[in-house]
Length: 279
Image (cartoon, rainbow, N blue to C red; front, side, top):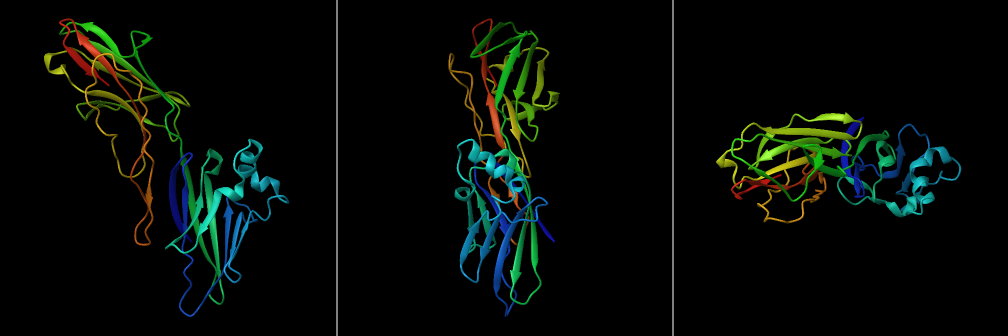
């Protein structure tokens, strides 16, 4: 059985691939989609009648429809409006829009042909939850905009605290687009931190660009775009979410091009009023 892995950012559209191309001299009959270990299809496409059927077992098997019914109970879209089967693409795609956390799981695509054996494709869907908050702490207080004044030779210690994110985010410090510290730890299930220590501030730190970054990454490692040094007094908090985009190919496995990242920036001043930008 072929296994496909798909990663999607929460709230976006998941594309679940399934090769429904019939063997030579055969024809497609039926496509059924199942979730996890359920014996009841959540979606059916009957190629013989060119007809789609959404969630046929929904009312009879409530326990199997938990994740879709949850949204209806909260006044969100119905399950049928979130699903679409793109059968004319290669491979065919089951599109699940406005993805929520409970959508994560294992999906099975069953393809029936007129004469050939049934084909099964497994799709493992992972839902990425971006980091929700990021804070910079100096001397046991949250700082924003500007910190200092500092003398040359002073030690600087900044604690970057990140809340939320699944899978657990990497928390890293970057200096002029170079990674300087990635030794983060998990304080609890959804709180992570990384402490940056510069033993002695020197003149070369003037106008340096430093950032704390929390990111969920899969596959190819991509950084958020670099920030320019911000003028004195600009707002500290910035959020940058980069949508993971998956490329499906029959010849290669899916790759994630972008992760979800959250950055925060502050500004540091030396005693002589020369600015040092700090991320």
